[in-house]
Amino acid sequence: MRSEANERPLHRNGRKAGAIYTERYWHEREFETIEKLKAIVAPTGESLTRVALAWVLANPLISSAIIGASRAEQLTDTLAASDLVLDPQIKTQLDEVSAPFRLGDAAC
Image (cartoon, rainbow, N blue to C red; front, top):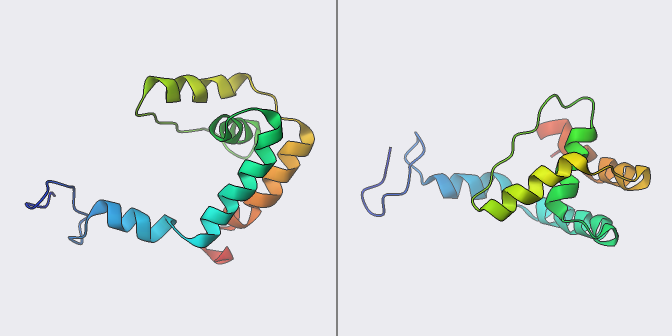
């Protein structure tokens, strides 16, 4: 479904899809977590995207990783994560920072 005013997709409830995404995910808690993750990753010299995907791939409880890119260089960066081996200390820090999010809505 699309709105007539600006041709942006509408959710089935009639609201703009971007507004629903923002309402669901753009909260101070998430932005604070990103800043913590940036601080953990900075000393590695790797991109946050690459380290995040390497963390996903290193987690035996996760059976697959879904990636997306809007530009070729993003895809190059994310594909390089498959060769990245995380330092155990970095992995532990990432596990700790992300733990509340792995509990789902129960953690909110």
